[in-house]
Length: 228
Image 1 (cartoon, rainbow, N blue to C red):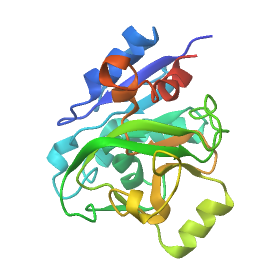
Image 2 (image 1 turned 90 degrees about the vertical axis):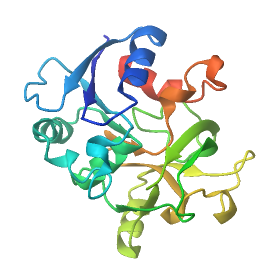
Image 3 (image 1 turned 90 degrees about the horizontal axis):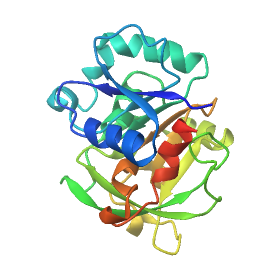
Image 4 (image 1 turned 120 degrees about the vertical axis):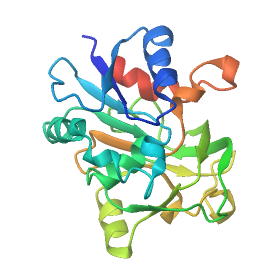
């Protein structure tokens, strides 16, 4: 049974069409755009919050988008167990909305970073990551200015105890360390799950690694999981 995927469009996002294209044309999924003021998502089985700069990242990344009417409905869907994934700015929105723990700071370099990045699969038991092997290294682009994902000590312990880390930044051979962490994120986290494992936030862009013409297909399985 195929799922109908909703790609949420906030003012200022710029990866909505990329994500829609991959789901519809590359993965042959059933997908529609969801305008941020919509409140009826009853036809959808899963949600994607794409990357970009919602509301121009005014105040801080994701700080205004969390108040959009659609977020109330997405929270209800997440609480019922529907899959929700936030990519880059979408990850920031999920954190601001309280669907994922932590906070975002500016990159440790204080500059915008746009490059291919290696990440390691830490948890492969979620709907999003089940297509990968634990410890598998993926090559997926990043593009962000506020990607420094912060967790305090107690929250990090809780996240580790619940096996919520989906991905960590790493080297090509899977080595995890400060020198391979592009933005300063706590525990080198590149992606994290909620406690129920049905909500994923990740800074790398899987939609930009779903066709070989872009140099990698390592991200396709993450979005394909929403389709199949």
